[in-house]
Structure formats: structure tokens, C-alpha cells
Length: 179
View (cartoon, rainbow, N blue to C red):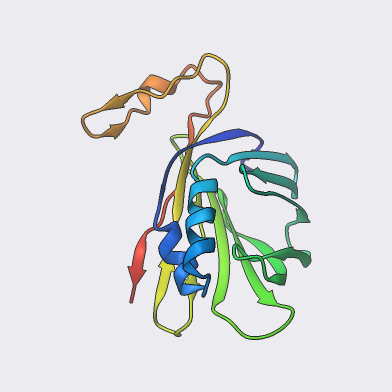
């Protein structure tokens, strides 16, 4: 079983504003949310199948507690109350389906996956149509003293981060429109 525990710092975020637009968030709130989400800090504590995830930005802090396979209440990325159910999709990937408690809106979910090279990938798709989806991903690295982000000509160098207790960075980045 993978260990998602750690304090993660963002490296890069893409398509977050586009996702908020699909969800119907007005332009002023989108700008505020994008600015606030540019430097989130994520703390994850895991004990077996039980998780605590705290995401802090300059505007808001969210905390969720859940156990894999048990329904719980949280909010969608745009703040709507929902029931969520997280399941293991593979050995290193959990998938959460969200069901709105009130009203209608685009279908939302999230996935978190630990890659073999130590990345943590968070993807949040949303769809208002059955065959269309927009996702975003944030890139994070594990916030351990002594770990430094180094950039090469092709992006972030994983080999430069290997001294960080085996966990190198967390990736959360939008994948764009999928049809």
C-alpha cells in the first residue's frame, strides 16, 4: 500500500481557471481563486485506508477526513456540498466520485496517484456533458528541508530531488479538454 503522507508544496498549476469556468464560477471569483490557488500547501496524513488531507491557500483552508470505501461529506472545488466516496483504482491511485447534495451541476470527482518516481498527481475533472471533460493538475514537491527544485531544459529534474527521503514531488496539473 502506498504512503501518501507528507507536506506538499506546489510547483505548477494549469487549467484551474478553465475548470472553474466549466463549473459556472463568475469571472471575479475565478480570478481570486486562481491567485489564491497559485501557492497552496497540502498536508496528507495516512494510516492504512484512513486519510486526513488539509489544503491551505491565502483565501481558504479545507480539511477532509475519510476512509477508503466509506461515504463522507465534503465540498466540490467550487464550494458545493457533496457526498463523496473514495475507492482504490490501482495499487497507487485513489478515485473519488462526488454527488451533489442539492441542485444540479457538472459531474465532479478527483483522483490522487503516487507515481513510481515519487510524484503525487491530483486531477479534478468536471463535465457538464456526458462526453466532455476538463481536468486540472497541480505540480507539487515534498516539502522536506534540504530538498530543492532544480529546473533543466525539459522541466523539473527528478534526479535532483532524490535526497528527499524517497518522495520527490507532487503533481497536480490540468490535462485539458477531453472528448
